[in-house]
Length: 256
Image (tube, rainbow, N blue to C red; front, side, top):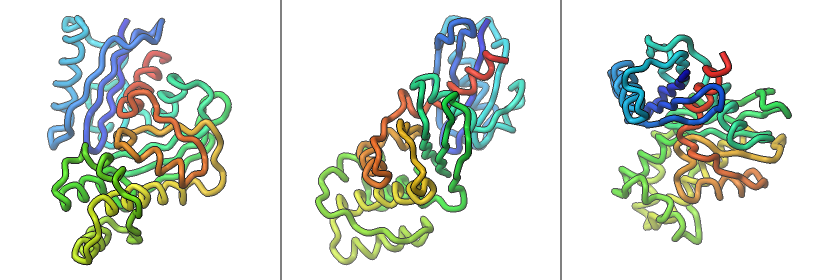
């Protein structure tokens, strides 16, 4: 048997294939999101099946999650990304109590019980200032490749203060900082701290260890350190953090 999890996120689509009995990952892949969400997901799904030597198979159970989950018509059912990220994290790191997920268009903080189930969660989906989209805007404004933002932030000794809660106003604030002579490194470091501060506001004082960081933004160097400083707790990046939602969906598909 083969089970599949499809995470149709706001910025990319991820697929994980799983062997139900052993929970062994048979294959995985991701591609950029686009207007043809279902077609892109289907193409990636077939590609991952082929790379796993299963091109003549269809998964016995397919679960979709993420921002565009309801557009994946070939999935058997859908599950929220909150449930899937919690499940994926706890599979990789049993005992996780707090999960921070920062994606392209929203950020979430989940509190788990001892069994890996979600006790409660907070979510920022009203403004992109606390998400990966903010980093894309900053990279474009500074003319720096997105993957180099972390290295640039590491050069800062005095992170700029980014106080705006809206990404549009924050971009205007960044333009003003550049005009006043602020260093790009300080601006990027300030942006990382700003995103971490928004997560900290969702968390309040109720943060339990271990804290796992997931989502594509977890791959940005320096982001985990900023979160750690704001939360006052060690922050561990989940294994393959951009694939956690798809992994969780595949695990739930295997269970069903």
